[in-house]
Length: 238
Image (cartoon, rainbow, N blue to C red):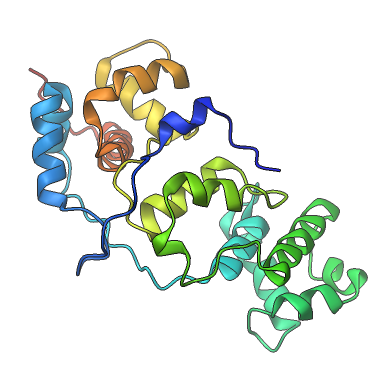
């Protein structure tokens, strides 16, 4: 059963995905930036101060391999997670295992690679979805809407909307993903507006309506706002 709420539907585009462009995006980056400049003067000031938008997705993605790595990396620092992920792959000659291979591997062997009980249960559930054909394939993903992808992937234990939002934004190049569950996006908006506290997801959705259908690009710039603040780079607001 999916864990996507009806409220969270508002974080995503609802139309069919556009065709993939030469830069890996499914939209025109220049048109997106022009739209955001016209829609929001504060966002226009951030765009002027930030480095150029440089998301260039690699659409060649194996959903099983991507989600396996995502599960292993959850709630761990990058070094520790990378070590455990490498140990898991080493059990299969350094390669991502086929779902049947993973399911046939003894639990104690997988736990010995450093997987917690919860992560072991999650990767087994992932392998079951892949084996049964309920996990989208490499060829299916480009034809699916954002909502369809969220529904199918969050049916896997341990995969929540944030993980799928990052996949949509950075790997599938979708234009209208508003990462309301991401601390960096909310913090970037707080810093840009000079607020004392971060907006709630609901308030962020309301404020971001004029950014549609390019909320992915706006989210990226809000992450950069945090970077600019840390570097002490001023943003000249209107």
